[in-house]
Image (cartoon, rainbow, N blue to C red; front, side, top):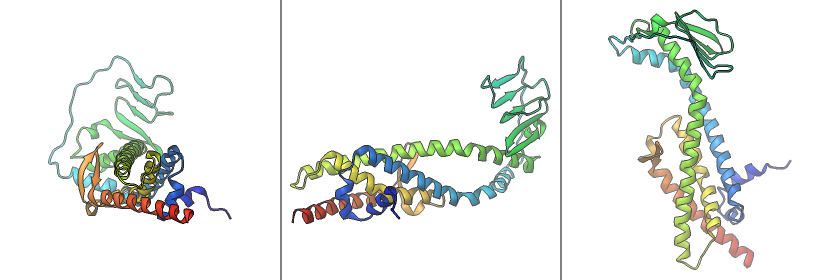
Length: 257
C-alpha cells in the first residue's frame, strides 16, 4: 500500500535530513502543503471545541443573569417588505404581516422572529425585547444564532491564520536567507522559504489545536491581524528552521561523499 504524498511530507517535516528534498520543491507546493496542514489543524481543533457547543446555551444564560434589567425598545415603521438577497432571499423582514417561513434562514414578521436551525424555530419578538425576563428562550435563540455563524467565523479565522503563517514564512525565511548569505553555507531564497514552510508544521498544529483549549502556556507576546503571536512557538519555529538547514547540509554532505 502506497503512503499518500501528503502524509510523507508531514513525516519528513519532522526529519531534518529530508529537508534536502523538501527545499527543492516549487514554493507554491509548499504553500499548498501549509494550507492543508492548517485545514487539518482546524478540523482537530473543531473536534475539541464540540463539547463547548453543548454548554453554550447554559453559558449565555449564566451571563445574561448578570444583568438586573436588559430591555430593548424602539419605534420601527416599514413601508415595504425587505428581502436579502432579492431573489431566493435568506433574510425577510416584514413588520406589517405574519409570515410563513419557506426557504429563508431568518424571517422577522409582525409578531415573531423565525430562524432555521436544523428545523424552523421561532421566538416572539416581545420576548426579545426583555432579555432579563426571558433568559431561557433568549439564550436558546442566541446560542442557535452563534452556532449558525460558526462556519463563517471559521472561514474568516482560517484566512487570517493563513495570512499570519504565510507572513511568518516570508519573514523568517528571508531572515535566515540573509544570515546564510553571510556564510559559506548558502541556499537559494526559494529553498529557505520551503524549509520555513515545512518547519511551520508543528507550530501550526500546536497553536491551532491549543486555541480550542488554552494558549496561556504558549506565552502571548503581541497581536497581529487580530491573532496572538506566541513566544514559545516562535522560538520553536526558529529552532526548527535551523534544524532544517542543518538537515539539508547533512544530506548534501552524504550525497557528495
